[in-house]
Image (cartoon, rainbow, N blue to C red; front, side, top):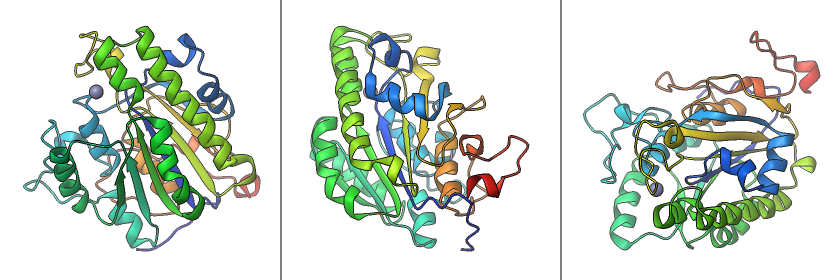
Length: 292
Ligand SMILES: [Zn+2]
């Protein structure tokens, strides 16, 4: 695959999925670390996840660049479509461009692990670890990889807020504690990444869905509280400020490829969030001098 590198010289994207974190939780619970990344980053509080607004569908969209209607993972049954047009899975596209991909996800029951691994095998080469039950443990498991893998994609999935939302309700005190656990891990991650001194790394924080829309302890509906997600890009090449609406979860895989200089497959439904990058003008022209 032909490389057409952006002027931004980004070599690595660290993508963190804050499962079930509503954007309004950032201010409501005064989450200092996420707020700090947001203040220094390019952000939206009105992003939209895929339909249905469930984790497996959103994760499959992040890893394929297409909607659930296209990739076929629309239930907790984890089945990638075999009959529709072929997919261009993100890990495979990255591998063809010479970039590795690793993922750190929460420990799953054995039966789910088998199903998820079956899906992952069809996505291309991903080094996936299912380990830990909270953000802190999953981040700890990823520590060695975050230090050693300087290129490609590192995907982290943290379950704390979603777990608390299902057990106690979205925006409940226990949900607030889950959101604070996510925030604490974001603080530790940003200390480890030290983005100010590493212009080749792009950090992306997002959520797979919100929650508490039509059901206090659920998130699968067309209610805005369920489908609205935050998305934040941070790094030395990022220009602080709001992203241009509308922003979709599907824009994230497109942005991962674009920022690494990998051409987008035609199948990808989203757009690269170019306006997040310093020196890039909304009219579509990159000011290479400003970005260099
Ligand atoms: Zn959930």
